[in-house]
Image (cartoon, rainbow, N blue to C red; front, top):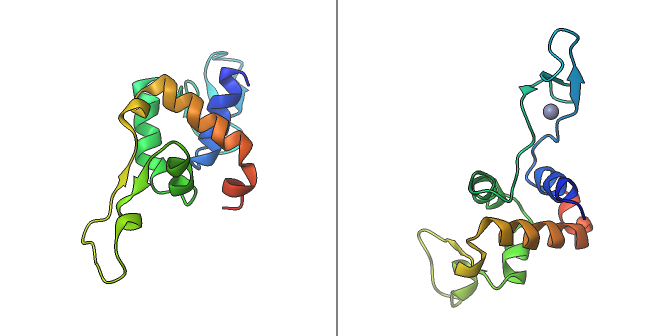
Amino acid sequence: MTNEERNKIIAEALGLCWHVRKYSINSPTFGRCIKCGVIYASHPDFSTWDGFGLIMERGTERRWWKCFINKIGGFSSIDLLEDDQELMEPDDYIPVSTINPPIMFTELSTWLSENEKEWRKG
Ligand SMILES: [Zn+2]
């Protein structure tokens, strides 16, 4: 996979538009996305700290998130509960080694490409 393919699959899995640029005669470097209408400058780069932040903000709200973090050695606190226990504020945990933008970028895009059926269903 190229880095662009990795960024695209992560954007789609996070529910973000992968913008398609429409060039303007007056401003060739700036345009409106033909899919969502947003005027934009560039695609997100998920191998940066800004991109990592987007994954942490949006990924945790996605249905496939728990499946993914289990694969990289993480877990949800709910998984640790005994039957009769309750937890006021359940939380998710990921290994410290994946709190690293290039590593998370590679791990997540690889998992997404190998598990498209898991996350494309919605
Ligand atoms: Zn768009």
